[in-house]
Length: 228
Ligand SMILES: NC(=O)c1ccc[n+]([C@@H]2O[C@H](COP(=O)([O-])OP(=O)(O)OC[C@H]3O[C@@H](n4cnc5c(N)ncnc54)[C@H](OP(=O)(O)O)[C@@H]3O)[C@@H](O)[C@H]2O)c1
Image (cartoon, rainbow, N blue to C red; front, side, top):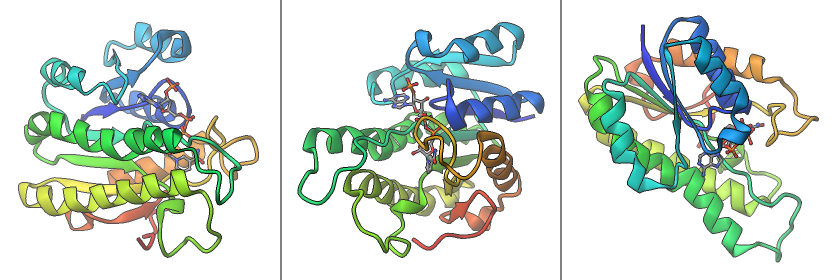
C-alpha cells in the first residue's frame, strides 16, 4: 500500500482524502497548521497508527527539510492546502497584500514542497504529485471575468504543474492539476454543488487510474480533461 502526504488535511477536502486513504490502509502523512482547528484529524491519529500528523504552515519553507527527513519514501504528494482570499470584490478593489498571500499559498508553496520532497518521492517506483487547482484558473473557462486574486493564483499553479511535468516526467513522475468540483467546504460555501465525499471519491479514482502519459494534464474530479 502507498505512502501519501496530504497538506491542509485538518478540514474540507484534505480531511476527506485522509478518511478515504485510511480506509484503504495507506500510510498517511497529514499536515495541519493549528492543533485547535485539527481536533478531528488528531483524534483520528490516536486510533490509527498509520496516520502521522505534522504541524506545518506550507509557507514555512525552513521546516520542509525536517519534514523530508522524518517521512522517508513517499509515493503520492497531494498539494491540497489552499486559500481563496477576499470574496466579492470587483475590478478596482484588489487588495495587493491579500493577493501576495493567496499567490504564495496556492502557487509558490506547492512548488517549494515538491522541491523539498523530491528525494522522498524519488524512492517510489511510481511517484505521483496531485495539485488541487481550480477550473477558475483555466483561461478557456474564464468567460465571466473578476476573481483576479484566486484565478491568477490557480493559473500560476497550473503553470507550475506543467513545468514540473516537463521536468520530472522523464524521471518517472506523474504530475497533474485536479479540479475538485464546487465543493461544500469552508471555501466552497453551503451553496456548492457537491459534498466532500463525492468530490474525494472522484478525485481518488482519478488518482488511482492515472497513467504516466497523463502527466501534465488538468483533470476534473470526474476524470474529464479541462482546457488550460
Ligand atoms: N471547495 C471548493 O469548491 C474548491 C473548488 C476548487 C478548488 N478547490 C481547492 O481545493 C483545495 C481544498 O479546498 P477546501 O475547499 O477543502 O478548502 P478549505 O475548507 O478552506 O480548507 C483549506 C485547507 O488549506 C489549509 N491552509 C490554508 N492556508 C494554509 C497554509 N498557509 N499552510 C497550511 N495549510 C493551509 C487550511 O488550514 P487551516 O484550517 O489551518 O486554515 C485548510 O486545511 C484548495 O486548494 C482549494 O483551492 C476547492
